[in-house]
Image (cartoon, rainbow, N blue to C red; front, side):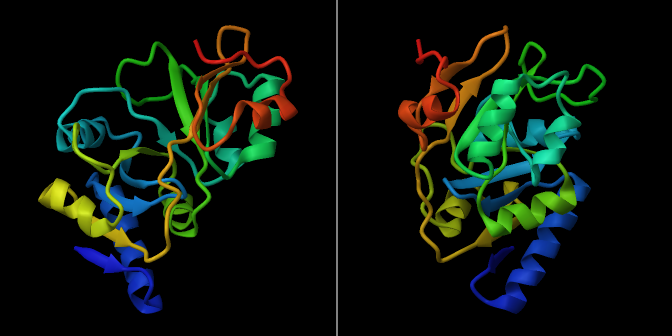
Length: 211
């Protein structure tokens, strides 16, 4: 089912339907500040597997959260540099790779005890995430296919594998997030996307460039 979130009543129905779908273990597509994402409950391993199957791959899946405070419940420990980056750039196009708490019962793929986490700057995504809790989210396209510019384009690729599509008329940035790894007692940029190295170094001067 596709919901046009430019209409207030349909937006409310769509968000409620997405929250219910994630609770059941179904997949949803929703806008983030960067791209349309396909998402699932991060703590339902079969849902994460379904997400990868819908995309036609098998890979580790990053996690989106609805608040900064959620991060503290997911990590083993958060270095000061990571806190500084989160304070500066969340919500926004920053993904941080951290060691997750060993007590967490989830299976996001082969991550060696780490997880990539981001808080998106989009009201629809945040509304959903604040109700569902952490979601495993990846770009809403099949492997080898272009990133969808609209929810309709995402539906053309993913079809009935997804229960709920949330559509917005607003333009998305259509850029990937910048990824920073704060594990292994150092801070290293893994991928440059929506944030530049100069922006990162204004907060953490010692950050290493991507290899």
